[in-house]
Amino acid sequence: VQLQASGGGLVQPGGSLSLSCAASEHTFSNRHMGWFRQAPGKEREFVAAISWSGGRIYYADSVKGRFTVSRDNAKNTVYLEMNGLKPEDTAIYYCAALRETRNWGTTLQDDFGSWGQGTLVTVSS
Image (cartoon, rainbow, N blue to C red; front, side, top):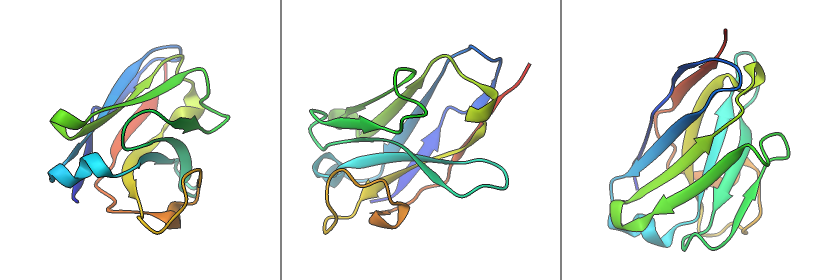
């Protein structure tokens, strides 16, 4: 499956932004999905994951209570709603699919594949 993230931009601290990740195939609906981000000079880190049905979700502690992940399988799209943005949320955001041989609950980037091009989120006044 090919993935393309979009929706990034410049936002002030405390603001909100919605990201989308569009998949190229209908098989997307069978895949658990994840969001990651990579800040300048730092390693890529896990943000959130959502099961194929949308019924199970988990977040990194750093975004819990501020970010919401969801999906619409009819549109082959997963979303990341970001509220209360902080300067430390500045990063390139990526979506990826959990590899079918990996366990639900992982936060390791190597357990995810089909990485698409990311979208840049900049939080600054």
